[in-house]
Image: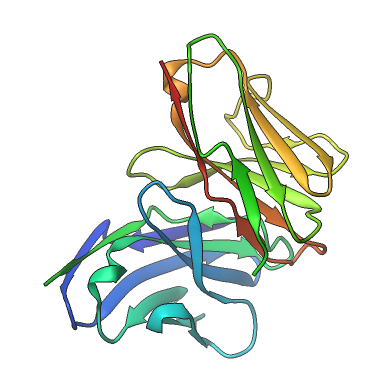
Length: 114
Length: 116
């Protein structure tokens, strides 16, 4: 079985500051890990994903995440926040052989202050 | 990436009526589709998994007679909320997965259902 915990339901940063959104997972099999962004009343947009291979994954809009098996973590970072980054972010996990069936974390709302 | 279209984007219905939500994969064949529900300010909860040509697999606690799922073709799955009640009001999102169990799933834009 898989589960995801996102630490912090709300994160606030200043424009230009580092963004760090935390995600820890639990999986009984090698996981696939994802980060999605959601704007109000819209669907999900995939930021990045880890399946196998390189543990540092680069995504869209300057985001990246590092898969750390020893820490069961997949934290999302961006060096410099933009106002347009304000949104809800979801970390998700799937079993490697069930790539489409996702279990989501609780979500983290990112606010960016001018 | 692949495109998944969900229709309608918003719907308001009266209590006791049924409403159908469509999820279409526009440029690929979706062997498997997933339906999620999202309450305001909450995460997405998987409701069911549907495979083309077979019965859907529902997650624990989801009423299969209330949330009817049909996946009649490789490009279309439908979710019908039957005898809707105000507590069924929610944001429903589908995703479609291509060939292969490990293939990525792509999300639709969601449907906001309001039952009055």
